[in-house]
Length: 292
Image 1: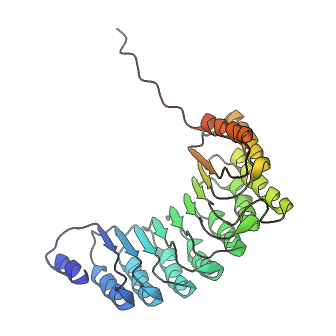
Image 2: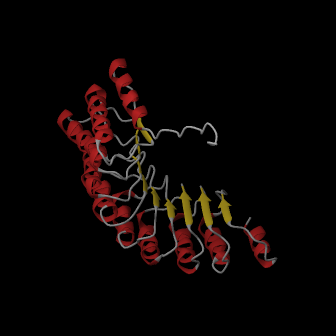
């Protein structure tokens, strides 16, 4: 595959996206590919899927992003990178004026890695989307993202699905939302949050803070809280918050709200779904024809 790309570069063929999904690529292959693409100004998206690039290959990716400003999207999916790669990526992100989206899903970065990456993210005013699904984050990682990224940058999309941030982490994220005016999409699905799994008081405090933010925050229009157990109490509170948001004079409609229906009674769930549907943007009616 690398030889094919190099040949395409030599023949001056134009391509805007590179997708690598070979587990045999490894660190050296990743380095070689990134080196070949450093001066290629047409490439906009670079994606590594399960390539076993590891931290050695991440050096090449960071260097590529630093040298080639044409790349706006970088995805490293399950590439076996760790917290050790984050300082290099942080340095690249800090100085980038073109990188719009980063996805590091299914890499064990952990709270330490997010702390290191945030040292660069906090200074970036261009990045619009950050995806960290199943990256081994805990409550501390959520706190860092809240304080260093959501409170300082114009990030629009944050995906934390599958990280065990629990009620404490959800609470940290919720704390910054009332003042945030940029975030439009937040995925907190399957974050080890639920009635019966944690102290009832901690769970209630966390979902209360999160759902309250929907009333105050006008930029957030897509919230995914699926696969978290909120029970009837949480569902009823969310219903009330959506109703209060709709009644605001400057209310902005919610495009989507996803919750887990397990443990919620039919009556409460029906009321919630009706409230969610009522918040969705209304489709414009077709005209009946021009007036004569």
